[in-house]
Length: 221
Image 1 (cartoon, rainbow, N blue to C red):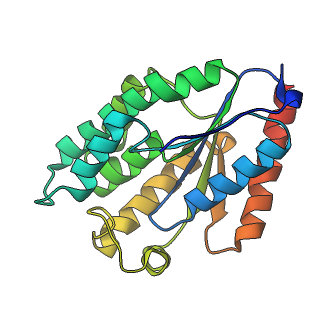
Image 2: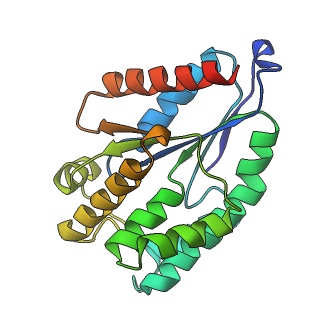
């Protein structure tokens, strides 16, 4: 689902767009923090595009349904990685890049790090192999900032409640590998990540995200 917030008059001429990704395990609160950041950016006069992976395009919504809610619940690991890469290629080509070219700030709930963590680490297909596949799909486009909301499997399960998709139903050891995959990515490129404890309060997390983004915006002026 894509939600576009139009810019106010004050937003004209503020420079090229930014891509900010929200990552973390299932139940980390990514959508909440993306929404709160978007509201704050809108108040500052910026044009904001909210989107997600998978499912940020018409094709993506079909792929999302197949891979997360398919009738037989069975998708081979390599097929899973390729489906997510296909969704990401379409998403970037038709939604993300055009918005960046319009100088919008794109906030995406998941991006390529999710594939590295879920398929590369948790499915054990290989960090570099899955990352290279996603980078090829997006022609090398990486976020200006990735907000990683670090959540334990136990916290994530409690937050999700009784409704689970095919990946959410995986055992805790799977979600432990996901968490380790995200942490490894952040440790490898700390300048591009903001790592936060998802167990902290919503308002405190939002303040930390705004502070980091404010610095990023100031540096771009």
